[in-house]
Image (tube, rainbow, N blue to C red; front, side, top):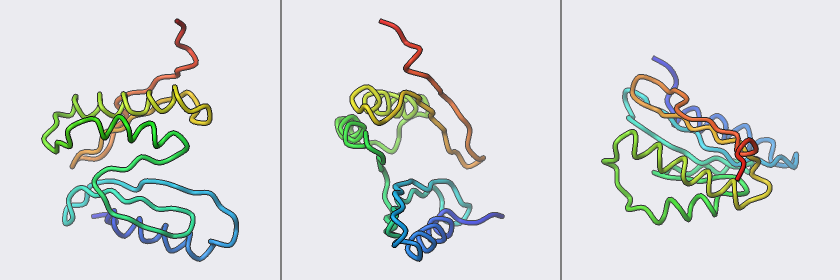
Length: 128
């Protein structure tokens, strides 16, 4: 059946921990679905820190994205459309307020059947 999300995040965490003296800069989310564990999301950084949670924002614009995520009621019964719209709103907010975030939005939806890209946008192509 495939590697679990917990195992994948642990492998990445171990590799980063073993190489923590190399001045790497990493902050990433490992997420997915495993038939035994259900849905999981982990934050892993360049020191090997590994945290399991239910929501993360990473990167230079993460505080802006987190601000949008925190204003929403924490609901685990959102429809796919509501969840995607929230993700787009949070990423767009971060991208427009943080010069280092770039201007490209890519949103992926993870289900029991796998993952798929559900939205992409290049904010540089938007004109006022």
